[in-house]
Length: 196
Image (cartoon, rainbow, N blue to C red; front, top):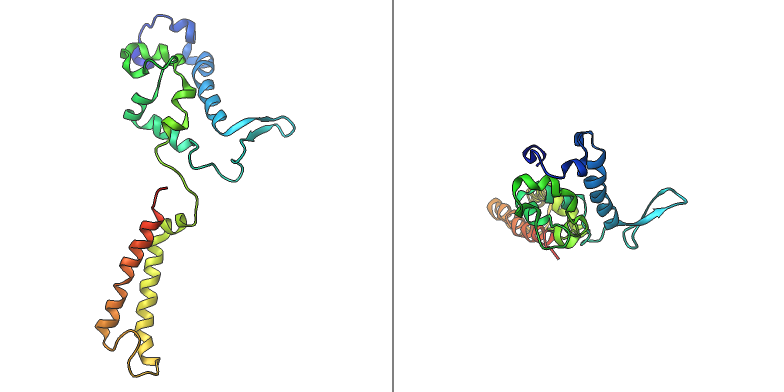
């Protein structure tokens, strides 16, 4: 945006003649973004401890509908989401609906509180549960179950006392029983990936 801006009317007032030094840009663009991110999670500063005070209910972990850095990174990373996400103050115009050369000068007029709010940037709901551990390690569990069943069905018939083993009398029957692990694993994995 800055390179294509060229001679923008009013840019000196916004950023100063040496806008690349960062002072006015930081206060006009970066600070409002930071304040919006801060307000999403924190209710203010704890003066006694000199650190931010989290909102009620945010102490253990973020609620599933709170926006986090992943959501904001995705907003700025995805061009389509960014073009529809940055709304100017007043809510009647999008930043990317304006001519390309005018956008840099209008960055300070973006309504960051509205544009970065969780109702506009949240693309998925995060739910914390033990299913996440299974979803992350499901292949390991499947490999362990297959190896365990192979060892069990190989050794069990030789040690079992009854004439007919539990898993079947032939090697093919015993190995085919291991195939039943796949639908069971698939069901458990789909349960771990359910979005609420």
